[in-house]
Amino acid sequence: MAGKPRRVYVCQQCGAQSPKWSGRCAECGAWNTLQEERQAPAGTGLRRGGFAGAVETGIRDLNEVDVAEVKRISTGFAELDRVLGGGLVAGSVVLIGGDPGIGKSTLLTQALGALSREWRTLYVTGEESLQQVGLRARRLGLATPRLRLLAETEVERILELAAQERPQVMVVDSVQTVFTAALQSAPGSVSQVRESAAQLVQYAKRSGSALFLVGHVTKEGTLAGPRILEHMVDTVLYFEGDADSRFRVLRAVKNRFGAVNELGVFAMLDGGLKEVSNPSAIFLSRHESPVPGSAVMVTREGSRPLLVEVQALVAETHTANPRRLAVGLDPNRLAILLAVLQRHCGVTVYDQDVFVNVVGGVRVGETAADLALVLAVLSSLRNRPLPEGLVIFGEVGLAGEIRPVQHGQERLREAAQQGFRRALIPKANAPRRPFEGLEVTAIRTLGEALDILS
Ligand code: TYD
Ligand code: MG
Image (tube, rainbow, N blue to C red; front, side):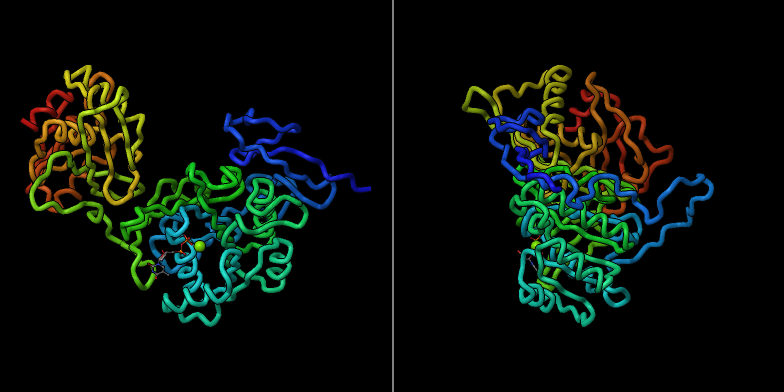
């Protein structure tokens, strides 16, 4: 006999369950996030956890396991393939997250359009009508007679139709709109997102069909149905970009089939997304002449060097607590660097608001950005521009020392190629032979870096 549905309270932020309601989640500490959800009684056929990840089960010897190179399918976008680790893997599940309107549906429609020339493809939309999807495809100029569409939100129905259609690549857009009939809670709630995704993942693993799941990002910046999906899937990609910039960056934050932090760069044009295969200098704003508060660095996100501009604005504060704001950079790192600046260079900003921003909506996670960040702040504070054609990289240590970064030569080469004439870098990254056309200043301490501004 099936039992009565169990009542639980699920935190919509972290997915933690509790038998009682409370104003604050005991797990993640978020307020007012607990919501009543009915769980299906045990034994209603919901399989959870342990997606064997393979069709075959049972215990094997390690050397019996077939480790032939996994077969990769090209998505038609070299940039998407690169982020996936060299193409799509059959039976793999890829979660693509991003703000609404960033271009997730566009990206997947175009990719599926290209894939449909060779593979059986199915686009399941829970957000838009077939007409809307059709209109988008027409705007994108996709001639894809073989791209199959389905507007459906019930997982059981989706899987039933998929079982007949047997797509080799399937898109479910979005995971927040689909629901399973086994649960009574509303679509988009944590239990629904988790359970529906689990069924879809299981289907992909069993059938060997590659699956893209689209997920919206909540205002807190996590994939809604927070993080609970990330461990279920093979690959997690984030699609990012400034609303007013046409450039979009696709970033791998988890990948069982490739490197993480790999970047793919796209431009959103009238005819859809176009890949930018040589993105090295697109994130620079071209100033007529040098302006205070702007510094150019070479970051190396993924496997390519990228020139990006860091901007700082330092302005006298009028409140008791000066503001510290970092967009595209780690705010904690900014606080540390300001402390280093004070302690080792005697530069104080306790009476100043400090805002920093990376141009073009890129996010830089590397500590190689430290030196450029500090110099941008100083340049704004002193209202003096950095020298023209200068490129900067280097990590700043707590003792005020400048520490080396990886791939220094490659960064220098890229800067020289893009027409930069001067470089300020860590001593330990100094090239053995001079670079043609690039005057390299290699330094040991932050104090030495300040000279460049005088
Ligand atoms: P969409 O893919 O619907 O975003 P998401 O699925 O992530 O919510 O993209 C929507 C935006 O992209 C919309 O603001 C219009 C823009 N866009 C273009 O600029 N060119 C195009 O060819 C298309 C299809 C969309
Ligand atoms: Mg969409």
